[in-house]
Image (cartoon, rainbow, N blue to C red; front, side):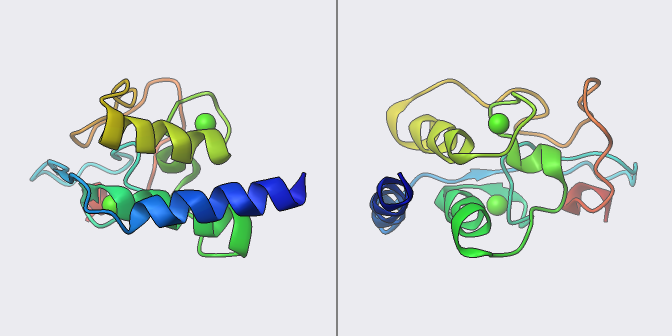
Length: 122
Ligand SMILES: [Ca+2]
Ligand SMILES: [Ca+2]
């Protein structure tokens, strides 16, 4: 199982080398603590393939955590796992479902804790 996950991760990382579309998040100009954009896992204000890589690095290679848990819960199922990276890849490359709100603009998720470390709050 661990080997399958490693192989799958490398396949996903390989996909990351392809040129990918990038959505620019739309941070609010107001400073309101707790806002975030779902899927902006590397907290750079854009949602693109780099966020998939960031999340996979965290999940499988001990990379840095996301700014807050909800940012990396791309499919909003209350967990962070490989399905979130796959969800984002399918959205970016295959026209899959849009990540649940807050996306693509900074906002709150009424069902989740506020995200105090997001770029949206700078
Ligand atoms: Ca990003
Ligand atoms: Ca999830």
